[in-house]
Image 1: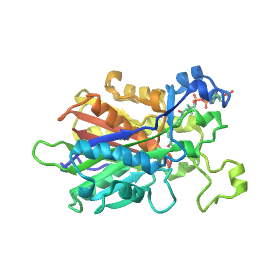
Image 2: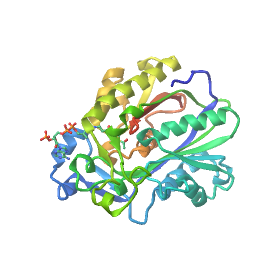
Image 3: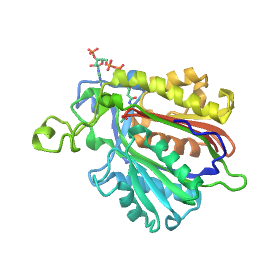
Image 4: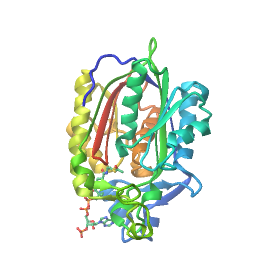
Length: 333
Ligand code: ACO
């Protein structure tokens, strides 16, 4: 579903991110499973990832990222109207991680809820928040992508455990005023016929937590990587093209493309198909691996703080994940 390019009057007022201190390198992983730094770097581009402490939950990382976004946007927690956390690794099945974040921040007047769209969640949250602000329901929103994937990783499966990491990214959205930017166009989609390609089979009502299921590692992520790879390239290309077209831009206009950080080969294929030079495509997956909903949010914050784009520049965000789901946004910063 693509949204029209009519001015939404909603802009990104600030960004923030947080990653845990502990670094897990490829060489360290090679002591756990039959893999090598060379294989992981060549096939994925990932060199290391961050792992949260046992007592560090998704909400703690989300709140740490949120505080930075609030500070940058000049907004206090008490002023926030809406908090959406995108995550597949909530602190608790209920209440929502967003409610834990609300409590930690002291965002007393906010409405808080989670969404589950895997790696696409942050841009799903962006579209939901944008529409609610544009419709006049709220003045502002705090959107967060946060994951503790280390808690749902099968550390004996070399085909997945080398890919994932922990972290969080956040953004404050506000109604645009004079001279502010605009979230110009958004696109999102899902294909529920492909749920089997990437999932956590256990832990829900279909396959409850019990010792038999835990013995089979059904509470951890499993993925048919090759299949997911093909769909990722196709859908991310389509979604990016859709928002670029709806925004009325051409590839030369774009200052920065910020894609989901899953695999460098996927990112290179998208840059190639969009005819955007590699130097305009932001990559940080060598440091963090795939942090699912957090990945594009962390990348947005780092690209912003590193000065990869400035107020008025045109940027494109594009993501892909389990569901399958995908989304893109064309933003005039
Ligand atoms: N170390 C060494 N060898 C390995 C490893 C490893 N860590 N993992 C797999 N291999 C082996 C396989 O067993 C296979 O061996 P075989 O040929 O003897 O059978 C060989 O390497 C090739 O495996 P493939 O799976 O074909 O490798 P591929 O090049 O497809 O790379 C990867 C795998 C990195 C997972 C890739 O398919 C990928 O990135 N897929 C997309 C992931 C993605 O985009 N996810 C997005 C969403 S994630 C989310 O929503 C949470």
